[in-house]
Length: 489
Ligand code: HEM
Image (cartoon, rainbow, N blue to C red; front, side, top):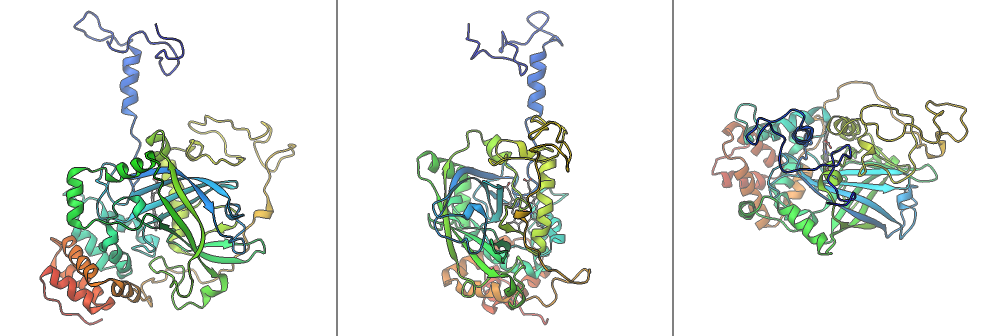
């Protein structure tokens, strides 16, 4: 007889006498409908899977601690940065973009780099990548772009033709394509890569002055990458190398660390820069806006349960705290909408009440009811279920945390984001920073990724490489074994 503490029960708490043999009429069956627990087990199993993330489905994560090491209070009043030495708990999740939940870890792809800081003013989410730029600058193109990364409707295979067709028709992708095809395209594990907030966000300080800001997370483990050949061998041995490395390191007490920096631009400078500082396909030159050290974070605790702690984690760029906000970046604006919408679909209305998403700061809102409302409707008093109200001690807005007003103007129109935009100088500068061996690997990685792509798409893409740097195009053409003559325009 087991003690009541360890006795197996139904989900209603009723003790179970036999968990080995189903209930049948005679030893050979058939089964009896009243075997509730058999039906419950089968029914529950059918509901174990939730929709995977539409992008970034395969991921690895852990909990950690952010520590402020340098004072940046002149730029932001965010409490998470309020004093040197201050620590904030966080949960991280890294991911590949295109592969499904079961994808191999060591594939060439951009890596997601998500951090949820449990601050005293609610959750602050930075949902970035391991690259400082992105493939597109207008969110109108995001579903189209992602379709090219996912499976072809008829073959059900990934299509290199679709990817290069889209990229070659979208010159703004060149910067990110160059990073993706470079050595940085296959990090060895999450701890060997940098993270970037990528977008321009904003800070404001207690004087109400606004700054534009970019976030950088530099790995303290050093960069480590696989070549295509190495990755093929790795995947042949294990499809789960990132999980093995990250989980294993933390279990051993070898906590991965990143140094946190910001680039800060005074609000008015955005009018003066030669490039659009809100264009996600561009970096801000470090010479003009140097990295300012802020702190570091380490990952020091593995999830107790991967599903509840990492799979149910719901990151959203909409989660900001007083002192940190958005910017006019069109991509960021769309993301502020898109993620919470995805969470409502993937996890349900009350996804923010799940333990991994629940803020560790006081929570007061007037949203009510709905499916799986397993926590109280009442914050403070059952009479305060609308606002404004006359109920003593009920939750009220706090004007002191208001963001300073942002001057905006302009005629409503669909502005051609490809007109007058220099898509070539920054990718060309990046290309010229590579040494000969790095350039050679880049050329060959691209050639391999272009296998089976029709000649006219290849030629169109070579023209983009040429505009960035003629050596870039001739290097890729040589690796492909094709002749390339630049076309006009
Ligand atoms: C995941 C939309 C651009 C980084 C997602 C998800 C959606 C989405 C719907 C799945 C969320 C979920 O089910 O939990 C979009 C849209 C974009 C965009 C509409 C552009 C308009 C970007 C950019 C970055 C990024 C530019 C990085 C700078 C990520 C990451 C995840 C993600 C890291 C995984 C979050 C996690 O770990 O759970 N995105 N995305 N996305 N996205 Fe984006």
